[in-house]
Length: 638
Image 1 (cartoon, rainbow, N blue to C red):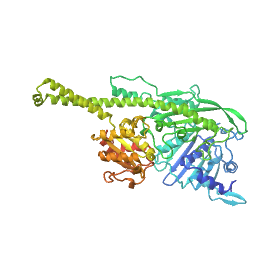
Image 2 (image 1 turned 30 degrees about the vertical axis):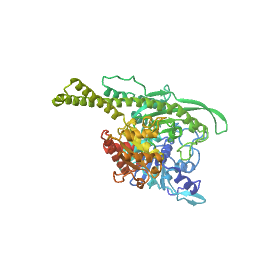
Image 3 (image 1 turned 135 degrees about the vertical axis):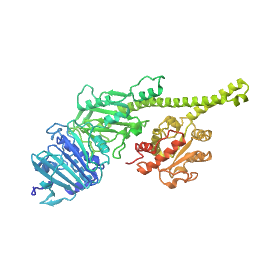
Image 4 (image 1 turned 90 degrees about the horizontal axis):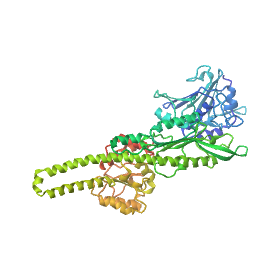
């Protein structure tokens, strides 16, 4: 109807303050709109996007809004949507409400200058346009209406209730692959509800998808798992957590080990997954009425470790290893891992999700940030949650990862032993052929001397083989300020075939890669450069920045490598001009090493690593394989 007016009870200053600055991620914006659909008792929500046209539509089949609902509820900013007075559950289905602050409707203005809000309720259509262009009329802030003939829906039939948010000229694109978009949205709403389905439609590719939880897929790629749930509870969350536990493959490494061991000794099986009860603790909190009362802090969820770094699915919008917090079915904190880190080995493999509804209990003060991307760090609920997850989940899962890795190492060691056995048999045959040679027999008339010669040759070969396997093959020379970069490079090297005992990296989390507590660092390096310099499979990676050649240890390493003519591969982390003598700029194409590298830089790095693998006598890898490993680290930005 052309005579309908839509009024705001606030001025454009508030929109400019909150709208453009409220959200920094397209998925958080979608999360707010999806949460509104959930609170409106929708069974389906459709995310229809066209990156070429920079347009996103979010449509749902919820209760919808009539004209009066717009002015009396929707366009009133800051009105609590979840409180003891308003109610904590939705009207029709009794769902625990996700919304709370009443400002999520402005989220779309963070990514779009013009947002159409259209709705249908009981056969009545209504719609308005949210934008920065607000006019004052009759002393009230007025926004344009959407004509009835322009209110159209993609999935709602005429007369069916529901709403649609249309964002035009969107500033940020949804992921190019629908699989990545699906994965990111599932991070926002894990295990949300069986009667609430989120659909994705990419108009450019024509592909569609339905959002489901990513936990099961992650667990299938994991080598350790701990779940926290009530086994005697039939709630949807407990059922799903128990299902995740049942999907874990505890025999993965043992099957591989059995294949390599054959009829050899088989180690006793260990359990790399645990089913724990919910973490429950009673804490005292001050409620909204200023009363000190006791509340139960209940933590459910799961935590796991990836088998390898290449199992992690990289997305620029969220970290690939994380521990997230979910409250009332919605993501509340993206990643608490940096806050609870134990600084232990394997933390880069960890992933998990924990569900704590007390964090957003409406009878308690609101601790959620305005943009719903975190919590107030000093709130006792949040502080205790971090402490409990650190001790009850993070510490045990890292211990499990150590056990699982030991089995993996045993399998790799057996493969190495099998390879040595084959090589030794070849050498024994070659020696025997040599001894049986008529010319050699004639030259050695004394049988005893012949036996001694054979034994000597065999011993020399065995010693040489053992030493070749035990010697370090690769050193990473770096300055301390580049440690975050070298940590990511180390992950790639370990994934493509190096073992931690073959690498010298003095800042490594692996004990076998660095000197011991009382080892002399310079003696340790002298052994690498001087005592082994005649071996042709040794090489050094120099990670160079402008401060590299003014620090004593890196300068000594570079000088020693130059003196004994060890093969080297320099990478620069700031500027190409950082490469100085004795490094020869023209000896190799010198790749860049930095966080968030583009595809071309990563391809150059992959090519360099391929050269290093060949030099060190490692198994051949295609550049594409190495590139996949790089993409699983922080070195790559999609």
